[in-house]
Length: 501
Image (cartoon, rainbow, N blue to C red; front, side, top):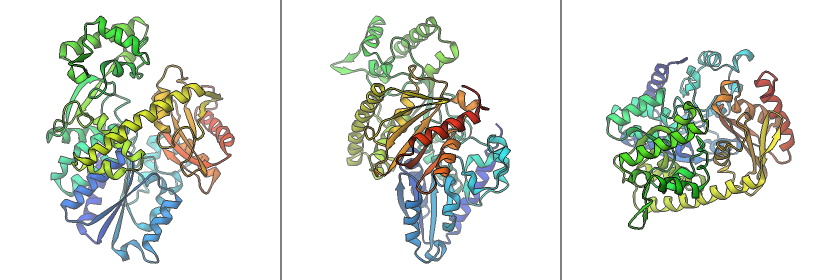
C-alpha cells in the first residue's frame, strides 16, 4: 500500500498517553449517529470506563456551525483545559479542524480532512499519495486519520477502527472490543470494494478473531443471510445484478423450486443460515452459471461471494449474529434519533433496548422501500457529467444516502456518472445533498468529497460539505439546486480532465 499503518498505530499510542496522563476531569465524546459512530462511541466509553475515567457522550447528526456554537457554550469564557474537559471527536472532525481547534481536542476520524485546514499545494490536492505527504508534514498532534498517512479512509479503516486503535493502545485487554470496530467498518461499507476487509481493518479483524468475537468465512455476499427469506434475499441481490432474478420475487421463487429448495419449514420461511452446505453450493453454482450464460464476466459474477463476519456469541438467525445486519440495526437507531439505543445494544443490552431497536429497524426498512419506489417513479435526470433526482420532502434526509446507494447499484442507472440526490433538510430551511459513485469512477479521478467541499465553500455560511471520494454529502441553502448542479457538473468534468464520461 502507498502508506503505512505503522504511523496510525504510533499516533494511537501518542493519543493514549494523553488519556493516561489524566490531566482532565471528564472526557466529552462527540460522535456521529450512524453505525460507525455508535460503534466508535461504544468502544471509547467502555475503554474509558475500564480506566476509571469520567465521560459524557454527545451524538450528533453532523458537525456544523450550530453544533460548534453549542460546544462553545460548554466552555463559556474558559478554555477546555481550565474546565478540565477533554473533547474527543470521533467519526467526524477532520473536516472542521480549524473550527474546533480551540477545544484542543482528540480527533479520531476517517473522512478526508478539509484542505482549508492545511497549506497544501494545488498539485497535491488531487492525488492521494501527494496529499498524504503534504498533510503529514503538518499533522495535528492528536489527530488520528488514515488520510494523513497516505491511506484511504474509504476502505482502510473506519471511525470506529481509529477509536479502537486508541483503546488498544490504552490497554491491550481492549482487544475484546475489536468486533465493534468490525461492525463499524462494514456499516460504512468498507468491505464492499474487495468483498472483504483489507488494510488496517484486516489487522483489527485479526484481533476480533483471535479473541473469539468474530468468525470470518466466505459465503454469499448478499445482505440478509440471517433474517431474510430465501426469495427475498435473492430478489434484493443487486450488486451484482442477477439477470431475471434481481427485483423479481416470482422468478426467485421459481428458481429455488427448480433446485428443489424448500422455502419454508413448519410454516416458517427458511433463511440462508438454515440451508445445508449442499443447498448453498447448489444455489451459488446455479447463480454463477446463469450469470455467465447471460454474458456477465467472471470478475463481476464472483462478486456473489464475499467474506461474512459472524458474531458467535449472538443468537443464530437474528440481526445481531451477522456484522452487516448488526450495523443496519445500529443505523436504524441513529437515523431515527435514538442513538442511545444503539449504544446500549453495543454495550450488551439484550432486553428492552433491543426490542426498541427491532421496531426502529422494521420502520426503517418500510421507509427505505417506500423511498426506493418513489425514486423509481420519479426517474433520474441527466445533467452533463452527473445524474440526479430531487425528492423534495418525500424522503427523510437521514436515509437519502442509503437510497442513492441502492439506486446506483441498479442496472437501470448509468454507472458512468455519479448520482446525486436532493431532499429538504429536516430543519426545513436547507437542502440536503448526497452523492454516491462507483469505485471505477474514483479510479478515473472522481472525488465526491472534493465536489461537496468546494461547492459548500462557494455558498459560504450555513453550507457544509465533505465525506469520502466514493460517497459524500452537503447541506446548502434553499433555492441553490440549479447552481449546485452547474458547479458539480463543472468540477466533475475538471476532475476527469474536462472530458465526457
